[in-house]
Image (cartoon, rainbow, N blue to C red; front, side, top):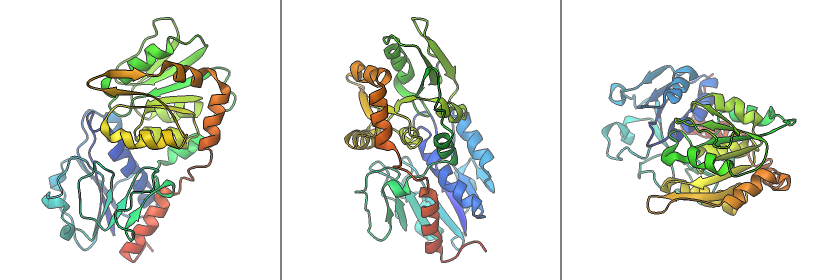
Length: 323
């Protein structure tokens, strides 16, 4: 059995499709399976670097250069932008097909459907759907961040990340909100555009990339979009504030808010622009009790065994495992 991971990343799509794929690919590679990555990555060099360094047997940047073998190849597909009619994606070209998807995923024909969120109502077919907390896919670095998290910070560390593309000036907007708060803190911004404090606060800027895994171990609070990255902060047991910027974040936004796992502080729409609840954000940053309430709510929710459970299921579909 060979696993072929098909996903794309760019500033418009974000990095979530690829990063989820890498979490599962890490488990498959560790089990000894030949794994291939097929996809186009533009304008996100840190994502390309992560793909190239993971340990894939081969990386195909031009998808049409890869020719699947229907006897051995398992397609793992995570995409919003590909068509179900795409010739390369047809089930007859593969041993079987695994789709990672949600409401915005096209109706690909598959043998196994994995929903990457925490809500458990995504049962496409009772016999071939894996959903809920037990099947969320995290990179090993997220568990390391949780286990190695600093407990003795003398100063409040706030991590701000707008996701792979930092769309709509998220980091700049949050920077202006943080500047309103009279408190000694360090704000770590992961963005393509540097954010400067107008009041002399300690704002530190980083390129979007692997440095975030280290800063995650320092962070007392995270502020992010309701995307894949929000689950990573929550799994690392960091009190997290979220905003919803695009339609495909609405599900995470609603689920995390309703379950009390994150503090929903705002939205962006093309009509209204940014709407941020400054009072709620300030309460999270200034109130130890609010932070502790969120930590208690998220503690132990994720056991980081999602990729292992999914690979166990894939091996059952295949009927064999590496000897």
